[in-house]
Length: 199
Image (cartoon, rainbow, N blue to C red; front, side, top):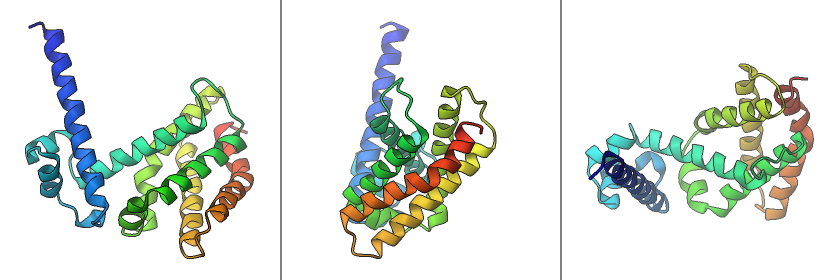
């Protein structure tokens, strides 16, 4: 068997192991708060060894961060087709709507991740991937990324988390969440534009 064929098999095994681990974790999140889930439980449900888990993730928190990164990328892909350049307000509004809808439509995330992690921990978990998205948006607009993109990500996420927490404590009307996303777009977009467009 050629080295390339062996590499293909290894890559497929890696992908399958990671998928099994993530699916097991998501399944456990349906009934258990994330800070109560152990590596052993995930490995058992995924039908992999603890050693296999640690070959992919350093901890449950690391797995959660990786899943958060994937959610951010999925949200970005859903609002902005490859190669298309949206206005900052369209981008911010689309991101806010898609993120809030993802939380609203996945009760296990709300009940067992959002509620059991402090807002600061949620922001920290998503800030790095969102900063990377901001930097990509800057490059598309011919602006060199600066450390300010991290501040922009923190500012944006802080607003999103506050809006979502307020909605959870209210009547939880889905239309109100859509209205909140539009409000974020109108109020936050100018600040995000200053960072992303370098103005």
